[in-house]
Length: 467
Image 1 (cartoon, rainbow, N blue to C red):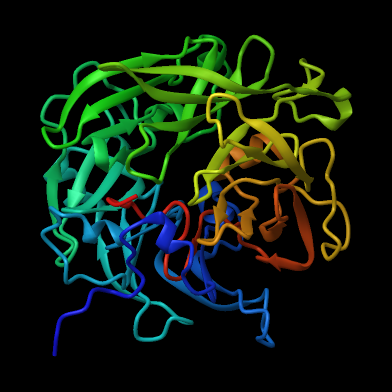
Image 2 (cartoon, helix red, strand yellow):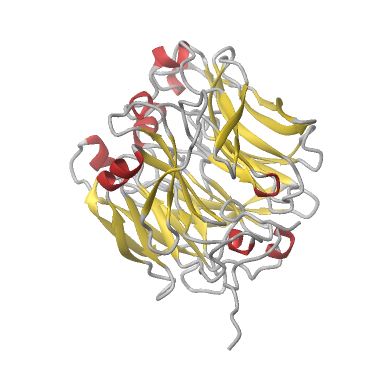
């Protein structure tokens, strides 16, 4: 029988857009009480949400797989293999998208779930312990995970003591053995957060948040006003694993987080979301792009803060009289046409037409939650805490899912009266514009909700080597 690759792998983003509609979402559901030492702690879990509108359990949690420990803080996730396995130089063409891997940002464990035997009820099959990661890489606090042509890449915020430098380490995509640190020469890079790549240009891009000690107890005002959080983008030679260029956006801009390169491997540009400007509390999105033999970066989107009275604000913001947008996630549709921007402070999901990435056009918005607005959902039964945070785009670009929670200690600072765990969906209109689906609202009960992964892949899971 001739060998056939995993049917959820696609050579190009254009072909992936014709994939069948997603049936399930796998959502990280961390518990805050365990992290904060409060009564009634729960174990974190991986929730399966039914996305099939023909199903009687549509928009409901149909399974929750708990992990065995308390206080892990499940955060991001990624697949063991994806469309990158079809790249010309991929040494693992026979692998399949079977295992969903969940790094725990606080405990530094990585949990591995098998989704093949019963996609509705993933089963925990292995745990990589923190000391194994530390002893083989020198890193801790794993964050972003991407399936590459030659293995699994994982970013880490720092070392086991909570200091820098952060970086990237690798796992074998079949045995899940920890292979070691990725960087051969890190140059001036010290802080770390997100990473992704341009496979067609042998280039990796990474961003900066802070060391574990700078973020684990919440935002440190002295560090923020002292401009100590990350504000650079790093360019790496992907094959040679060497730092080649640092792009500094200026220390007025603090916390350079999510990275979304163009999906088309012939394009050499991408977007970076930046949480806040200490000058005016605005948030921003930056474009990196190739300029001759070097890379350049510029601000292409600025989102201003919104005025608010002191009684609407948490103690951290009362002196400012305004709500910062707090751009904490961005996502790019597979056709590289629409960029989605989460404003976790003001409670807004924005849609930009980025057909010309140098001049994005704001074409759609929905409001829900928010520090001051507390905009309800038609099915929430009243005002909502939390706001658009982790955002995921279906492969065909027609449905956008997003959740409400950021990171436990940060949630507590910006929503001190409690943050509700929820997931909602918006539908994309032909030609631009988005609308909230009034019938899709998932209540996570006592848990919070973070990153969404769609069965079969989504707009932030796969990399492609063919245009």
